[in-house]
Image (tube, rainbow, N blue to C red; front, side, top):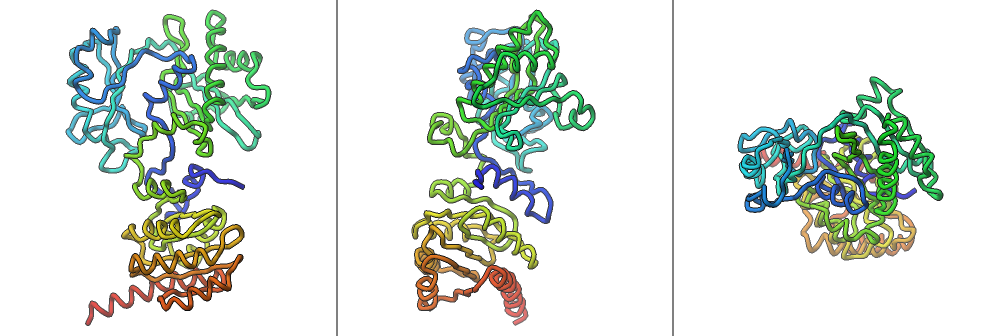
Length: 432
């Protein structure tokens, strides 16, 4: 089974005190304005909009962008913007106005300031971009999304005539208002499926063909950009008889980055954990958690098992770190740098099964990293597989204070015990 970083991130949310871990774990999710550009590129009907990054770009708005009513939206990767507030006291990340002279003051209160919502960290997220869009006269809101669903073996359309609200709440209170439409990935979306979806969404005869066209274009976008999810909430019917995608969320298959370079270049890493960004540069899969035991493992499944057994013995993993099967010494060194840069890490467990990877390579990397970084926390190593005897010999002859374990159970016990020993030493030193 292969894991994308996004799926690993979701699984790792379960490892903080058996509850959802509140730090935002994100890979490539585009800002709303960037999603709108993509939709536009594939012919999907969206309202007129411009993107500004400073107050100068919002000046003389009437000559650049004249509409009856403006929507000003702060661009951050978090929901609940409308009910949020800024660090300067300004309330609301979404504003409406018919007066173009009021747009600039609103933009000035947003750009460069931190927006705090229910989905952001306590300190909020700095707003670097603001989208100014045409307000739409909404007659009716619907929900439309396409996701890759393993149980169906391909794309599935999820639709509801009750859009514009939390779809999870709709599913709980009125489940009959949500319907799924599996799509054969080889045949693609047929006119019959698009028609069935539009009818379920209650688009009347006069605009049904427009709805069918939009549904087909959204599916084309989904396939061509290697998306794992395209969510339009709401997909609206306007008073003028148009079908418009008002808000969009698009997630992508991380494995398709080589095909979607232009899209992945839009990724704003300023909201990402710097350790995760650094790890990605070296092809290391890293996700930060809140424990005290740093983990370096090869293979996502073994990493999950390692975190499980640490918790079983009373410890808490500080991270998920999969170095992969083709790891080299430089990557091992970088992995140790990332682990030790986390001040919460009080001990480290290396657990490697050498199938593709050579255990001797890992051992050499561990020795060199331990010396170069002058490692000050306890280190427990469990190696098994290809060239393991040579690896054990290297570790033993290094003369470094490395604790070796013959199996994962023993490794977990030793790394958890190392925390207790370290704590006892600190307590003794304080008394002395």
